[in-house]
Image 1 (tube, rainbow, N blue to C red):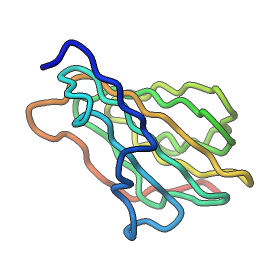
Image 2 (tube, rainbow, N blue to C red):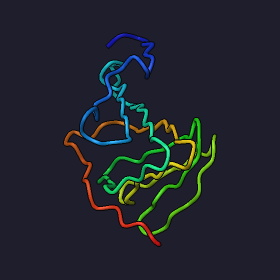
Image 3 (cartoon, rainbow, N blue to C red):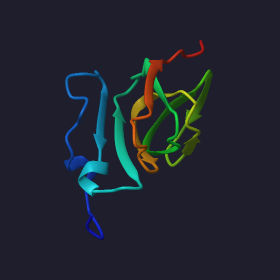
Length: 128
C-alpha cells in the first residue's frame, strides 16, 4: 500500500447510474487503497427519498452534509439535516436519506472494512 493517495470524489464512477433514479454514489476506498477508512459521496436530487436503507453488523459510519439539506431516517426517527451537520450512526441502526428542495450531497466515512461484507439492505419506513 502506498503511503498516501489523492482521489477526487467527482472523478469516480457513479455506481448507481441507471439503477437508482435521483441518487448518485461514488466509493473512494478502492481507489484510495485504504485498509482502515472508507469515504463515499452520495448526491440526492431535490425531493429524492430513499426507500431502501441499510445497517451493518460491525461498521460504524458518519455522514457529513456538504451541501443542501434534507432528512435522515435512523430506525424509525426522521431528523432534519442542514449543511455541515454530521451524523454518527451505530452499526445496527437502519439509515436512509431524503433530500430537501435543493437536493443534498452527503460524504460518508466508515472504518475498517470487515472481513465479510456486513451491510444489509432493508426497507426504509418513513414516519408520516
